Image (cartoon, helix red, strand yellow):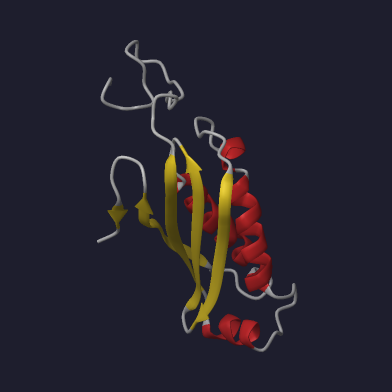
Length: 155
């Protein structure tokens, strides 16, 4: 188990000590997709959704959620975010969400970016459930990260 960073030599769960890591600029982009029916998409486009504009509410909820990542995921470090943004775009089959998180710190912001799109997707679900019951959230994944040991880009 010692190869897993959140396990100590004794096998107990631990927070990773990042105090010896270099401070560097770190970024992460993540995405999620909320599958919606043509009728629900039409209601959003026509600004005729009973609960209001799900895109703007989801964007703000995603930013707020991403800022609370260390409170939601027990072993995540508290980070001073330089920027956290969420884009919500309507597509023919639903809503595409993309987040970008930026910090200058000793550890990355992947979890903040992933949390942001997850909370945004759940918010779209909540805002549209009065119109459609069979909403599906898919494709939550990291698109890329920079900084730290190595950069990563989703293939």
